[in-house]
Length: 524
Image 1 (cartoon, helix red, strand yellow):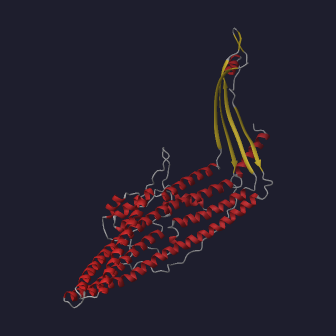
Image 2: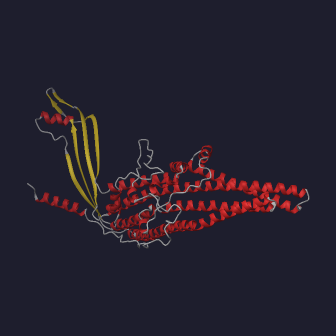
Image 3: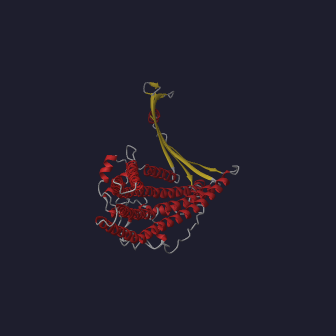
């Protein structure tokens, strides 16, 4: 039969448990301003390769350059930025686990054993004795802070939002390293072509200087003209050496980026010498809003807004009372007592104990304005994260616009540059024919040759600009990242080493655990 006292206690417990469903109203009513319905720059669909492309996840395969893929994979494997991003993901996962634990009771189990002789007298058939007893004990205790005002739930949502953002930054680090490596590689291929042209120019100038010197010594050419030809030859050699140095410095940078030895790197670079890699194109959405779901930095900024809103709710809840509930159950066994109860033909409970409570209430009375100050600081941080999100979103659109503007400009100039190359090549061939027929002098021939070399330089530089713009567009579009990929496989193995995620430079898909639930829980 349940007494009134027991009924009162149970009713109080049910009420307290029911209070845990209460929560503070969320403050995040931020809704980003929707972007324009279309790009200002024309889409790069008028490129020589028609701008048609499979998807970004296999982006680097489109360059059809195995050396580039090898370098990107090597750079991603040794990048300190990626390793730091991994560490931040692990830290965020740990923080989320801690926040989850705050919503559940904390249970501890203690066990003890001892052996000794006490002053207890135990009667026997031969009299009395002071027995040696074995004492065993086990006790389980639980404590639980009831989340009456939703403080712990807000903390959990805050950490989930931070985790989602940190995961996205891990992907961004991989995209950045891949783009940086590609830029170095593309610039090296340009440098190879410019070095080849500089070598041809130096050889041509040297030959002109030699013939000019002979002609001057024979009295058929002014000494000043011969000196000018020699000076031009020296300047051409200087430019060749300078260009060679630029190529060497790029190699040094790639070595530092990929940890590949210089000898191995030079062997790799010997493949496809002088060929500037160019992708088959890229497909860009007509609606910038799609971009905002393809950029990991945009998601991180959005989740920071969410986290800041939950921080406000957390600080608001600090102003209200805190309720906690404790309980324990234990069992002890004393061999001497057990024997005594048995001899006296009495039952023994073997020390079984339990209790529920106390229910503790902690009510903040005076804190000299600390809680209000924390709330103001949290609200200020919330406004700052909103501004940061808007800035990141605008910058994302700008980066895509810049890349497309560069691609469109390169396309518009490509026809003119090709005409210049063809025109100067025809002029060089005509001058060479005139020179062989003694209708043009050597200086005219060398001038025509140098003009042709400069036109070729311009063509290679334009192709390099175009290739780099494609890389910039790849990065601006998020490198193939999507929200569904926002759960990298990062875990500790038995030796406390971070496991490598299932990812590569060629296919950047990441195994998905359940990012949808993360998104919903992180949203206020």
